[in-house]
Amino acid sequence: VRKRQSMSSTPHTVHSSAALVESVRQFVHSRGRPILVAVDGRSGTGKSTVAMLLAETLDAVVVPGDDFFAAEVTAAGWDARSPKERARDAIDWRRLRREALEPLLGGAAAAWRPFDFARGPRPDGSYAMCTDVTRLAPNPIIILDGAYAARPELSDLVSLSILIESPAVVRRKRLVEREEPRFLEEWHRRWDAAEAHYFTQVRPPSSFDIVVTNG
Image (cartoon, rainbow, N blue to C red; front, top):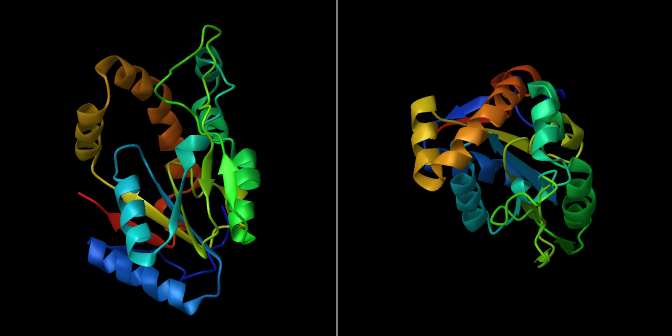
């Protein structure tokens, strides 16, 4: 885990969207451009809602980390991995860096083919990518949204790391409301332990710049 350089030696905890926006706004105004803000957290914490709020308020662009799910790994391949390995391999961070983050931080447009959640696994057990290409114009403020967004391999690019936390009962309720039961059962079996490893061993709350309590 990188040493935090952007804020104080302990995370700044906020309890409201207004407080979060003000904290991020102050940070953005104190820094040069471009800036990459990573919004991280477990499934169901409300990361995407927070990311969109920040984007609308700060006139930023959002890069969805889920677009870079490691689609070439089969379901059997995921199940053969340990929680540590799943957390390590879930996002194709090399492609994320190359196709989205580095171009945008360099003042250029970015283009990539996102992972297609709707199509599900192919006959060989691997996963599909969208045929359409996502394109983003250059912007001085970039929001990276998704679990594992603040992973150590991206720490040299991230200016500000934000952890979104919610009680487990709230997270599970949100997931039940938006996912099919069969998919959700498999999701919990495969990814709960990976997230637990990541948010305790790789990026514990103390390693983030801002921690948001989102109940």
